[in-house]
Image (cartoon, rainbow, N blue to C red):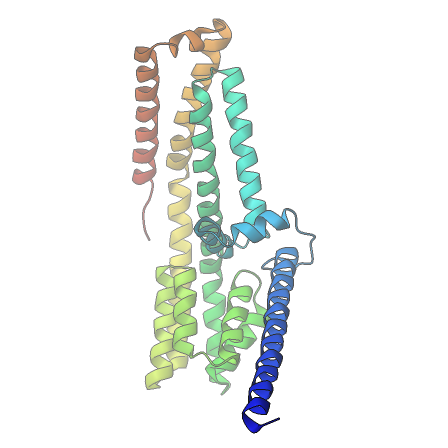
Length: 311
């Protein structure tokens, strides 16, 4: 057999071996990726070891834009939920409120109750996020004090952040542990702290991060700055508590007014059974109900705006 034939046979065999190896590598990588997704779906973002529900839905939902948005919101709330679990619970809540409103009030109120359930789910996530931010802000004086003491003892800022992550409780401990992990894999202090301030936005955290970043870049009396910042944060903490107490009545009023409207509907329907169904059976009645709901919503938004004061 001549040399060109041997070369062709050798090339064919080599291509076949490389093709088989490539297919095997692709299949192995795909299997590892699927196993990783399954493990993430089971353990969840907090790795509590709790058995996860709806793993199939969660795996498919994470590939969509809606799933990614839900995952980002859940990541900053501290909730031990996967996007699939939250999505299933939200859909179940929408269906339950839809059926309850349709049966208790009138079929016209079913879609409205479904929209209210969607709004309530999004509001719940925003409330949990704000609650976590408030708790983190209350821990900032302790964080600043720990960093000041560690820096005064001659420790580097990276080491001081690690100590604070071990000593502080959640959410500050969890967030600083994430910052420490990012620093260990090579991220700069500026990027890690900047991402922290984006996850939990607040004026107090921005001031602390700016102080740490500038001190890390230009040097200087970081201990004195942190001690002064600790006193300032303590004063702001007390001020925020006083303002929140003064505005608690206003915030309660914002939620009481819509509940009064719902109570009026229930009372009307209980006094005269079927009155809401007859009212919403005509175009004029539906328009009047929508107008009333719009006015209640406007009042809720206006009162919430009046009771929202940034300190």
